[in-house]
Amino acid sequence: MRVKVEFYDILRELTACHEWCPDVPPGSTVAELFFVAKRTFPALSAYPQQPVFTSGLDYVEDVHILREDETISILPAPPRC
Image 1 (cartoon, rainbow, N blue to C red):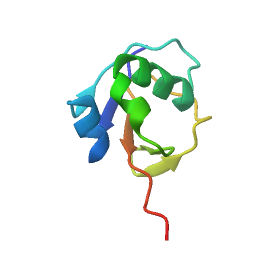
Image 2 (tube, rainbow, N blue to C red):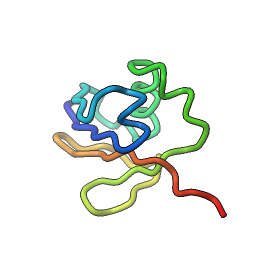
Image 3 (tube, rainbow, N blue to C red):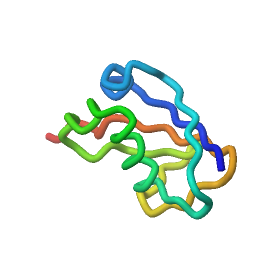
């Protein structure tokens, strides 16, 4: 099944792309998608924090099950005070 991934800020710089459309098995989670992203874009492994994931306007956890044609945005973690 195909999903669309959008990378933002430093993550866009690390991947050198804004949009990526991988095929993933049905029932895949955001965590599994991010694992595939790190294999596809090895520079993502250099990012030291867990990024934030959204689907549309909603934040989603890494256990979120992906849907066909869903758009997942991957954003840098907010700064810690």
